[in-house]
Image 1: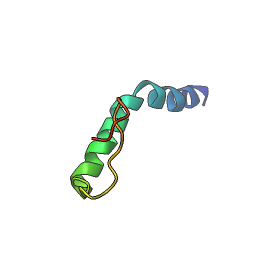
Image 2 (image 1 turned 90 degrees about the horizontal axis):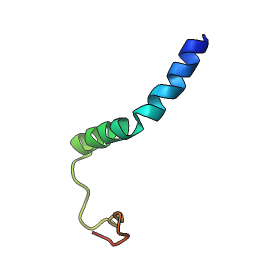
Image 3 (image 1 turned 90 degrees about the vertical axis):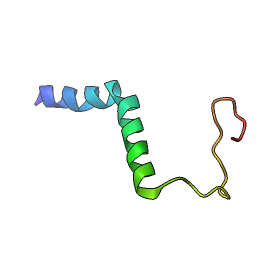
Length: 49
């Protein structure tokens, strides 16, 4: 039980960036590109794209 507890915490922490990209790609494939009239998100530089 301790093993599965550590496993369930360690895997999401170690692979967060990969899983986030996977879900973003799935969302993009399902919903398509966002509407150009919607408010665009800010990038790393803080400027609207």
